[in-house]
Amino acid sequence: MKKYQKFDGKVGIVDSVTFSFSAQKLIESVFGKEQVKGYYWSVIPSQESEAYGFDSFLPPTLGIETSSVYTHRWDFMEFLFTAPEAPVKNILPDGTAVYAPQVPEEEQKRIKAYRVLSDGMLAFAQDCAKFFGGRDIFVSKGHFAVAWVNSFLSYPTAEDKREMAVIRHASDTNHAEYLPLLSYRPSAAEFWKNPKKYLRFIKRSHWKTPLQAFLVSVLSPVAAMHTPGNFTLYFLPRAQRCYGKLSLRVGRRVLAVAVGRKGE
Image (cartoon, rainbow, N blue to C red; front, side):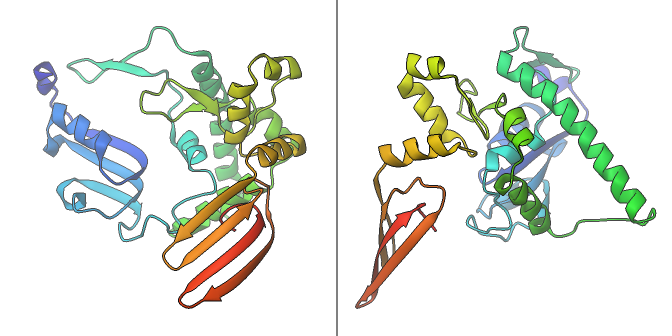
């Protein structure tokens, strides 16, 4: 690790949301704290926040449950933030990245898709500049961008579902297990070859077909949610929406029974 100390440039980290600054800690252990700065979508308040140099698009005063920070599917935001590059396996003393020689098929598809996505971002920016007549435009409220992403996640087109079905995301610690990001469309033969595995993929999918939603609901018939002063029993908790809820107050507690999506 000491050989990297010869690098005398500045290092910037671009990330989405952090609480423990784990990535920044790792980079700082190599290059030194003074040479590293983090750029985040949002920083969840913690006792460690003041110990690190960072800028945040959303102020570091928002709680972990704040709806203006989190979208309906945060790993899609991770996909938007990702760089169209192969996984990095090493960093040379001059700061040059050494990429993995063997790039997984899932990463190849992500890189290819991101080029199209980037072109769309530029086209959108050009349309905005044309529409607003060259005036400076700055989105100062993060919840505006989150609402926009949530709208896309809630109202996908057939093309959206088809194109995103090939995108998988490795969100595990080792970045080795690739799961569907938004939609998953296995063939019948593929599903029955390993139904347990692909049922897990379907559960992970955000955009389910009616048949997929039915399978997931039937195989997960009951769930409970307990918070201070509240207890709710859900039937068919993985349904696409909540179909009804009945609540009863008993002293200081609220007991409820619901049919449909958990949490609504």
